[in-house]
Length: 478
Image (cartoon, rainbow, N blue to C red; front, top):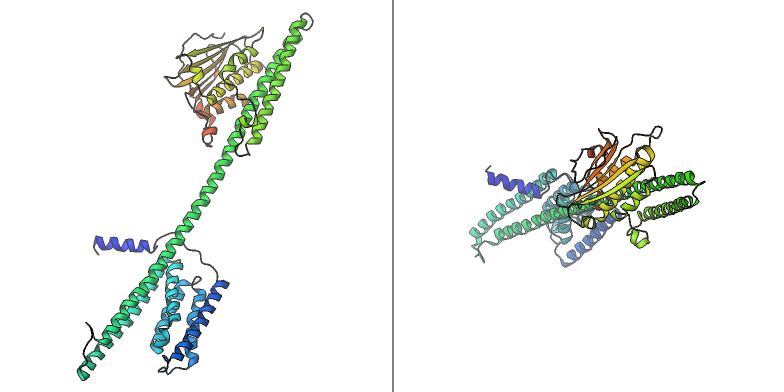
């Protein structure tokens, strides 16, 4: 076979679904199948008797009950046309040949012609094994057209004999008998071809609907998975926020309480000021936690937002000086420096990134308060739009305080924040003494939990030290 012929055969097999992994579901025989078979059977019997009344069946020698049996058995085949499609198609072809040979006038009735057409069409439309369907349908077509060819040959011979005996003239290109047989051939070509094509179109339509339904289910499942993942990401973000808020304010309260205890006896004014600081920090902590819990309730509510709920916005760069001042004590000096390569860079920093910078500084200072003996802490924020980064560095001169090992959630929160912005993190003791927390965020990045519900990378992937620019000397440790 040539390449062109092979290609055409491949396309034909593909069109018939040979090799297609989808299989049409095979339904059980239902009430509708039985009702339709009964309706067609009754209609066929009524039509048969009307034809008998006209006198078309007067030359038949077969008894009436045999003619009824032919109609009823043909209609009964349609009961299983969807359950056993290929078998019904083969039985319909056998029924057509048998009745056509014994009672051709009955076989030519409209009802049985509809039965044979539907049987063949259903065999193509409902077959699960497409290759076996093609074999059976091809066999049916070959048998039918062989029968017609035999009729044509016999009819042509009979016409030649009649022309020789009676010398009848022709009215067209062909004599009457060969013309009738050829007309039958054309009609049957349209009849069987139409049944096969319509059945295949039904199969392909059912396959396309099933594929679309499967895709819709997949999209729905993926949408639900993404929604669930987004909710989980939001809850993790709120958990980090809650940890940062509680740790920060409790740390500030502890500082103010210690200061009040030291000066209570000799400086009532300083004690009052410290107690006012404790009161303010506690109120701010309660307010922040109320806002976060409100946000948590909005996670399950479509369209919920902090603005619509009346909650305060997240802190950013403008609150950093107050944050640093709150952690300064008589025994610990905390400095803050903002280094902008281009003036006004802080105002152009995105709100999500500014909030993450604030929380990073907050957590680093809280860790210093809880776990370090530092007396000097330096907070430096470097903003460089041209290089494309915002870097925050918190350096202290202390050493770990004994008996204060923490849970590690603070550093984990810093790493997760950096990962959500695809930033880099360096946390650990310095060779010259003290401790350093340095996080570099890409400029203009947005939190992945807000943009897409993709989980952040593992924390261990973010510990690659970033190159350290030195726009100003930073106070070193011991």
